[in-house]
Image (cartoon, rainbow, N blue to C red; front, side, top):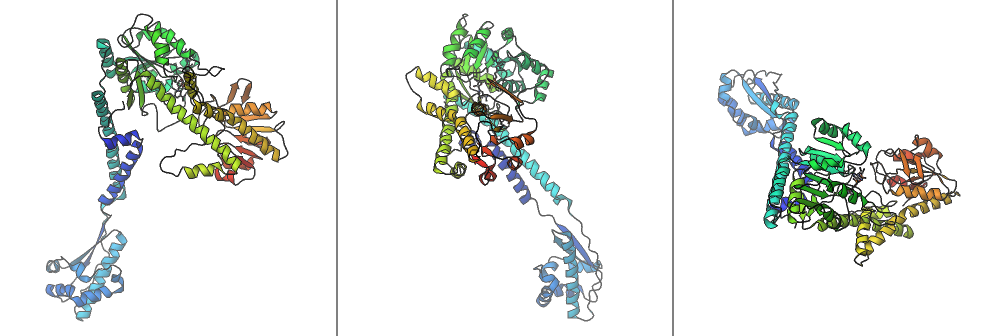
Length: 637
Ligand SMILES: NC(=O)c1ccc[n+]([C@@H]2O[C@H](COP(=O)([O-])OP(=O)(O)OC[C@H]3O[C@@H](n4cnc5c(N)ncnc54)[C@H](O)[C@@H]3O)[C@@H](O)[C@H]2O)c1
């Protein structure tokens, strides 16, 4: 039930994420157009022939247009380079009038002022020479040796750039305006094609009006990597937002206008707090005052590998104490299909309120990729599925004010499954490429070379890269929610299981590489000093959750290594038995290490320096690139 394009070409472009490219293209087109449209810089040189000797006007005219004279003029060495004849520069000149005024003015245009002057002088000389050749007494007299060379300000480069910039800005703004109009039309078109049969009646309509006007009071429960950016987005859309979290430290920080999430600048939080548009609290009773609520609490796995829905259950139980008619609740935490309907719906209705009539319940997965700048919570299309059509209608109005593009689906379950498809797709492809790395190793091939070559195919291939294993709160966990759910219907999700097995085994594979590399140097892991570089689960973030580096450290320690780590984003690790602080002096730690293991390729590392200082490196991310490939002391995945 994806909305139909009102303009198929623009629709295709927007959906395929080429909006930035489109805008950049428009700006480039603007620059090119401006350069082409504006004339090249022109300068004019004028030279005055002060007397015409004893030639009459007719004679000068005849002289200028006589083929022989023209030919002679052209053969003069100074003139020949300009590819002009004497006739050319007399063309159109009213010689008679000029002579009456006591002078003959030759005017030359050129894009270079010096050249314009030079050409004017040369022509004057040529004219004199031609006249002298015709009659010994017919010299045209002296000419003013200082031609006037006025530059034309309106052709100055700065003006061109300004024109290009303005054109680019107008086109870019036009693009943005068209996009907004496209969204509006698309929403209208969707509404026509898939009319939401509102069963919520007056309550739903009143809530929708409040949401659309920005007068609704919004709440976000769970202010982590997902919840805090959402608070920021709702605040910027003009809503008054309440943030609820059980972590008192986070609440304290927000009250002081401080952000603890890299993607949300403190300045934006501080601005919302100052305006009174953000209130942070640990007290759930504030739900009584809210019109809309998004739930962004963790959905981890239990030690047994089963879904741990206790966070969703706890929050639902807390908020149901304060539910009131005319409220919309949207679950954003990733979970298996059926969570919203099976876990939340009965609790929401337990106090006599009817979902779809009195209150509205929906699921909308968060798709944020922390650290990413091009696709954020605002411009990543938002998939939404309601428990009833009225729930969907209200939820669309809720998010539609703050987020660029809505993707309504037919049910909460479809929205839940969409998120799991996305994350399973990643987990399976990473599993595949990790296995390809192992296969290439067995065949003596360089997997990085093979991947780069495959990635040149312009269609039908998507590049994934191997590494020390999966990390983060989503990819290693979410697919297992799906496979767990499927077990309940007697189905074994084989791709998920297999990918999970390969990915989970990667830290062990990396430790095997370290073992082999040390072995070549007649050393064992036992007793070796090993420095692990980068422990966050991906580059340029501080998120340590499910990071494979933790497993690598644990396995190396089990084998008797003395492990240290360095990560500019993670000052310390407190994870189960691993209690470590990042080494303060990276260079001296590298110098002392028997082996450096690169587990996360943060941009801030100077890889050339690390390579120069290290004795032995196991590079699991191809961070060293060609330098690593060509170095004897580097072992790559
Ligand atoms: N991090 C991501 O990149 C990402 C991306 C998409 C979806 N998700 C999903 O979003 C959900 C949240 O993930 P996250 O990364 O923001 O987690 P997080 O751990 O960063 O944040 C969760 C927040 O919820 C709070 N919390 C826990 N229990 C609570 C309770 N009972 N009441 C109120 N607050 C409570 C925690 O204190 C924490 O601040 C998860 O289901 C995750 O799978 C995460």
